[in-house]
Image (cartoon, rainbow, N blue to C red; front, side, top):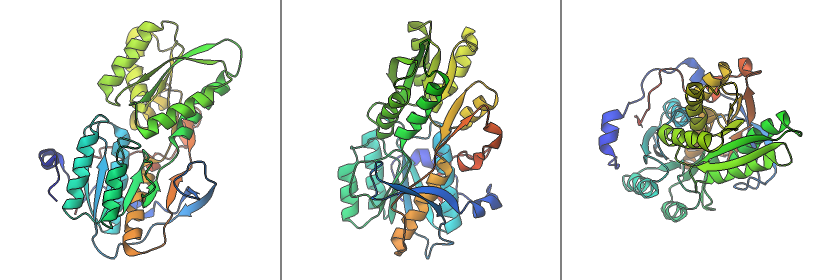
Length: 356
């Protein structure tokens, strides 16, 4: 396919052929929640065991679009889509836009995918509303569109493989609220991510609802791109502005950036850190008791399911239109019981941009 950013892909692309274990063949059945009616997080849901197809009937060409590959969160999703494409025997091309400011780039990349003959498109959206016209255009051509991770508002989507980031933020907030239900106020700086992204707005609403009525006072909310440099600058600014801060709560990149900053300032014992999603850095931080907690949304599983949904739709099989793994919070107390394979790419895994 003649996608944009071909120079990036040719320089960094890896054709998936090795590095996966027998566990990739046995990830299922996996407990998920299914929403009905779909596409509304307020809809009733039920727990089901998700089992994918054994193999695809043909080597379908699936285009996958991510906002970026700047952090290990998306590396986990990348592992999920790539490994499931290989297991099912379909082709996969991944494009990444370079960041949450690059909506036009994402739109152009997806248009190129479809023009080059993609049979289905899986989108981790930069904007909740900003791709709706594109989704309508693609669906008008008979190409299925799967919404993964971030969420889009289009009613014309074919399926969703994602969880509620409102609940992710809510679980982070509830964790703090349980620690400080009443009494002395504790001050928290909150870093929900890039303004305008659907998952960020949902996460922000969930977190604020989670701490409502508790002794947790959110003294500042700082939006910003999920690059390490951007989040580090926001953390530094918050620490300068609020010298009596008790908590830093935010994206996984925020949490990872905060750990060395707090150490350098001698604040590790004073200012505690909570993330509202999970990455290898957060995993290590919890293991080392540098980060208190983080909910996991099983990103690897979301990636696997999105590819299976696409194949099922293309081949006319029954499929769950809106599913996502059940959420749970990993803490310093229960970390030893956490199965990281649902959420994190294996150690040493490098980004995969093409599966043949």
